[in-house]
Image 1: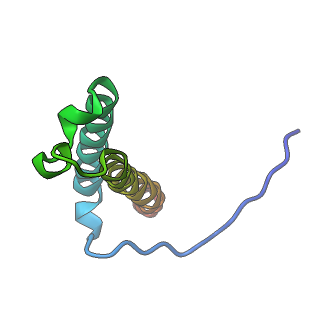
Image 2: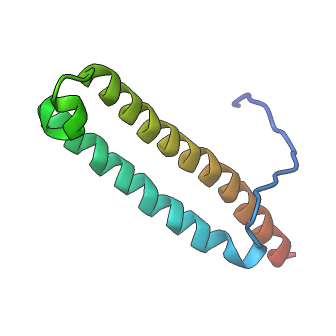
Length: 99
């Protein structure tokens, strides 16, 4: 026998209707793929190739890259977090339809 914790919780995702859950999951999946491509592009490039013209001419390259990566990771995490909530909602809707 296994062990674990079972939790029943209320989940709320702003601006998503019951009918829009699947579409929102797909939208988030597209954004996640975009964030992954952007990170891969940054990893494969030299720092000077991906910063602004202003930074190339004497600005702080590392700080600009750090800010850009932080923004990408924040969006990536937000999409994953929201997809987890949407999946819980979807499973709850599916259970209600089965009854």
